[in-house]
Image (cartoon, rainbow, N blue to C red; front, side, top):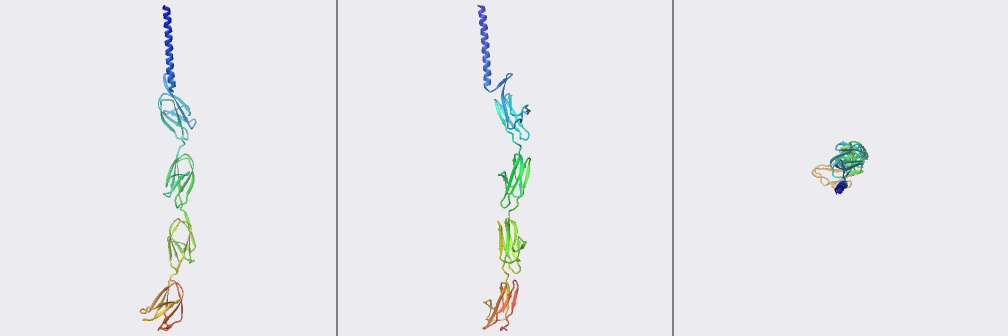
Length: 320
């Protein structure tokens, strides 16, 4: 009986040990199925770090790892700072709270530089590679590379240029006004042409001017001055028709002359009987003059009137 009891006790002990091993195996399985591992009795999780730059340096809590990206690490659950670096690229930094297996993608970007575009026109529109970046003096942060710069403003010629950006850089875009041709003609060949008070030349002169409003003055001896304001928006020709200055015909008659008439190129005028004097302003030229009084008619007299001058004529035939 004792032998059977001992045998039965040993069998019970073996069964108990087997149950304990099964329970232990079940616990490990449950832990593995939860995504972790056990290392020396401490649970760990898997952290995978990948990058678009193969071999990029990986720092975990500022400690450089002995292998570059892509990298797989077994870490205890917790919070970690991660930094991925590569020469010629901006650092990638993040913080993760590891509670299970995790993968991080570190896309490193090239360093950006400042491109500043300065212009002399405050309302100019600034474009880089066709994209508007601002008005007037403008700047943008860009990756290294070659860019096309275009600056436009109404009334100014467009600025266009290319720049290779490998550091901070400033471009000066000086816009030049759009210019148009102005030609000034006159019916008087020797007429002088002035623009905004400055003498430009003689009749028929041409000049290139920015878009805008100008005062045009054309003068010639013996002619009335021609003045006008002109807004130049394109090539233009101005015709300045100068009118001759009048001359004066001055007629002196005896005092108290009555019923005396005179004719200028057939047009009749009556003499002022009180003053005995008659003044007539006429355009330059030749005129036929004749007189009548009391039924008496004088022969015609040819008189030349000059611009800006007075021609005096004293009738004597039959009036004294």
